[in-house]
Amino acid sequence: MDNSSLLTLIIYSVITCCVIMALVWVWSYNIKNAGVVDIFWSYNFPVIGIILYLFAPGYEPRKILICSMVVVAGFRLGTHLAIRIVKHLREEEPRYAQIRKEWGKNPEPKMFGFFQMQAISNVLLAIPFFIITLNTTPQISWIEFTGVVLWIISVMGEAIADQQLANFKRDPANKGKVCDTGLWGYSRHPNYFFEWLMWVSYFVFALGSPYGYVAIISPAIILYLLLKVTGIPLTEEQSIRSKGEAFKKYQARVSVFVPWFKKG
Image (cartoon, helix red, strand yellow):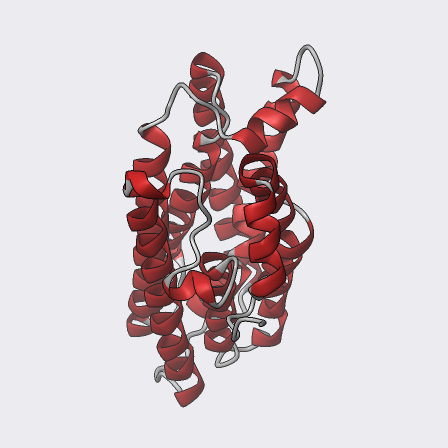
């Protein structure tokens, strides 16, 4: 691996993502809605993918393959979030409203720091992409194709889960109810599960490159964040506040993360 190329790519990516998040923070400050950070956290990965495609010295077909995967997945998730968030732009997501409340009278400096940390996390999580696009081996191995297959499954699964939840919420008869249909009947967070599986697929793809084992850091971080920090804990706290006993019964019956059969 060319260390000078790696350092250059990291610097380009960090500067670009931090500038984007600084501009997004200005927007969020004006509209008092920090939820827009989620949109651009997703869009920053395609930005990194484009930087790597343009400047990484790796094997061209491999770069086209992985960068296309990153761009498609990032734009799909970012656009899905944008459609949901922009509809309620003046109503901050409850989890961010709760964070703002906990940070006291002047939360904006901390919020700016939070946005910048999101930019840094983009680059940290992109470690598999750096490893893959620096690989100059002039052939694509079976382990890399295995990663592609796993990626297809994960992106399709996440898209289906997102659409099923959107369809459920669109029906006025379901207001105040818990979505337990489709994939949501087997996991309380199938969208999170398939998001994590997508990062596993990038790790598997990276195993075909030198130092590919280092890429395990990405799915490990994502799993920790989803299970312990900003993912499932905050989402379920809000669901209990908004849906009460109905969600507690749902918790008792349905697997929290990995899709599995219902209890009882």
